Structure formats: structure tokens, C-alpha cells
Length: 453
Image (cartoon, rainbow, N blue to C red; front, side, top):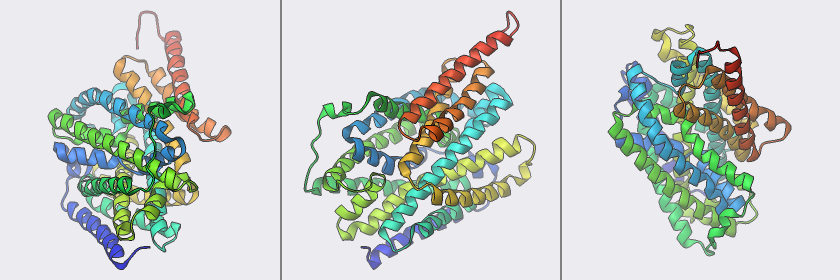
């Protein structure tokens, strides 16, 4: 369904992102490569937060949930808005600590407050989460290119991953920020396409407020908790808090990015409902991609590919860079296996290895919804622990360590023996609470009389 002009448009987008990424990497020092010298302004930070959050997990999985559950899927965005509101107050604290102690990653927080063991445990969770999001976005990008072009799924994944790796290796964090700004424009154009689709749809969906409650209570709670806790444990969001210039720019950037995020959520809800009415017998996991290809005029096909790919790659590059940063800085450097002089080359090697592994995993894990819920459950569990530490900083290390371990077990064990579904979020949260309580009991038993923490 693509014309020659469509292919030119797609090729031009790939070329622009590659050139921008390569040019960005010219003569960068450590702080510049890793954290953009902690000098991002409000617009840059808002753009990169917004672009990194609007990836496959939102565009494809959220639309799939709307396709399956209707208006009730909005509970995820209701939770997310509450979560971002709470994160604002927490973010002001970690901004100050991050500047004072030169934090680069989320695990730096655990290393600083709860010691090496908790730091390494949190690094395992962060690396697993971030790599999972890399794989998810590779899957989405592959399905997108496959749907619109003659290229098969495997080669589509290679193409998506290869372009992202090229500009990441060259430009580092600055390349992520600058390409995110470009990709944010693409995502905003997506709003125009979605609004057009809502207006042009022959059948308008009927929306009733009571449809919000037409799902099981457990699923409603799962959606809300997933949205609420994810900001607390989003390593890419922490990285941008460290990179923003000051608290004033942080406040403005979070407000702007949250506003755009909420608008996207509402319009995606409408799109999902339109596709649900007009195309009732398609695969829910690719309902947005198929819906665009079937419902948009042919002349808009190439533009829609570029726009959706912008959203996918803006998340994939962020997660790839954050994963590599955590592996090199939180594992290799803190353990003494890596010197500061070899940081750049090791980061680049790490990103290359992660790209290869991510492509392999994208060949194996092709179900977008299951992949999303697995890694959302892990993210939400870590977010729960972060919130506990923020509310009660004196929480003992046993509780922290047990919660992190059970957070991982609480996702993996039910996923293996029960299967992946929205209930995985509840299991993960329950295991976290068990770990927290077990740590309190163990601390009480082992601590000498009169000693705390």
C-alpha cells in the first residue's frame, strides 16, 4: 500500500536520525556522553520524557487493552497521572541528591542509601526491566515495518535495531535527547492523524462513563497500580531528573510532558474504540498498526509509518542507553572491573551486545501484550519499594533486599506456573509486601537491643 514517495519519506527519516546522532557524538567528554553535562532545559527534558514514555508499551499495548476492554483501560492512565503527580515531589529530592553526589542511574540511589548489596540487586532488576522494554520496542518496530512493507518480520527487527544502535554508539545520551526532540514532533503529528481518524470514522463509538467499571475489580486495580508505580521505578525518568538543569526546569518539564502524555492517552482511547467498532476481528496486539493501515487513506500510509516508528525508536534508544549505562557503571565500574578510561568503549561494546541479544529475544517473544505485562510487573514492584524508602528512609536493609529478591521471584514464578496476565501485577505486589514484612521481622530478631535500622 506504500507509494514511492512513502518509501522516500521513510528512508529520509532513517537518514536524518542517523546523521543527527553521529554529529552529536563529536568530541564529547564523560559528563556530556553520559548525562548531557546536567544542563538540559525544560523543553529538552519535557521532549525526551514525553518521547521515551510514548513507546510500544503505550501505543500498541494500551490500544490493545482498549480494543479488549473498552473504556475500562483508562484506569492505567488514571493511575499514571496520579503516579507522575507523586513523582514530582519525590523527583525534587532525588534531583538535589543526584547533583550533590553525581548520580547517573537509578541504582546509584540504592548504593548510596542502602549499601552495595541492595545496589547490585536493584541493578539486576533495572537491567532486566530496561532490556525488556528494548525487546518490546524491537518487536513493535518489526511488526510495524512488516505490516507496511514487503520486508519480513526478522529483517524488520534488524533494520529497527541497527539504525538505533548506529546513532547511540556515536552520540550517547545527547543523541538520545536530540533524536527524542525530533521524534516528539513525529509523535505530535500522530495526534493529528489520530484526530483525523476519529473525525473521519464512519461509525463513532458510544462512550458511557459506567463502562469504566465493566471489568473485574482485580484487573481495574492492576491497571491503576501499574500506571501509578511505574514512574517511581522508571530508570530513564530518573536519568532525566539528574540531567535537567535545575528544579525550576524539572518542574516545568514534568508538567509539560505529563500534559502531553495525558492528551495522548485520551486520544489513543478514542482511536482504540474506533478500531474496536470498525475492525472487530483483528489481533488486539497489533490493532493500532492494522487499524491505521486499514482506515487511513493511502496517501497517509508512509507518514503513519514514520510517526509510529518515531514513537517506538524514541523509547527503544532510551532503554538501550539506560541498560548499557547500568551494566557498565553499576556492575562493572562499581565492582572495580572497569576503569574510567575504558568507560566509553565499554558502553559502546555493551550496547552492541544488547542489540544482538535484543534482536534474538524479539524473534522469540513476539506477543506484545504478554511481554508488556511481564516487565510492567517488575517495574511496578521496584516502584513500590522506592515509594516505601521515600516515605520511610530508615527502612532496614533486610526489608530492602528481601523485597527486591521477592519482587523478581513474584513475577517469574507466577509467570511460569500460572501464566502471564494482568493478575501478574497483583502477585508481584503481594510478594513485595511479604519481603518488606519478612525484613522487618528479621531486623527485629537480629538487631541488638536498642539499635535501629
